[in-house]
Image (cartoon, rainbow, N blue to C red):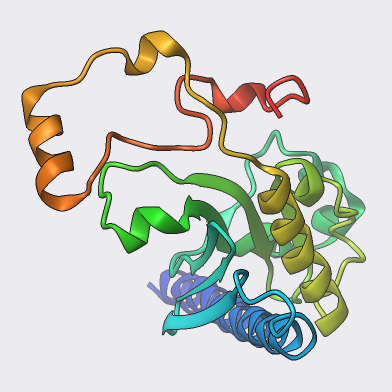
Length: 225
């Protein structure tokens, strides 16, 4: 019984430490997003009135950053995860010296079209473009598309800071700006139901829209871009 209680305390305190580190990271992302909004409005908004940047704090675990036709949604997961045994970081000396370093909190980054929220198009699709994994020592690992995937990942040395937070945020924004809405394949949208048509007439809710509707997002190549 003594050993079991000690294990419970050890694992419980580890997860609390990781949760706190992830929560602090989320606050840094919020600050960076708010600063981006302020900078844009101060330096660009007057001459480019049709373009806007809006930061919105939804709750302690989520915020949104809207710019032009896109919205980035940052969501902190409240649970703690461990890297799979086959993941590359598990082979590092950093993890082998202390296996508890492989447990991480997670912040996910989703991209939606801003009109999907504006017109309440509940069937529209967003995409997970990246996720940030943070361990008890505030070391981080980034998984994601293109610009996010280019963030240098050295889990043993990468420690979160205002600079690294900005780099990740700006990479997500840059990817989203370059992630364009493509015309869907003709065969995907050639049919429409009466219900869909009536909805379009009554509530300005068009058919399902997504940046890669009709394409496989996994094939995110320059050809699809």
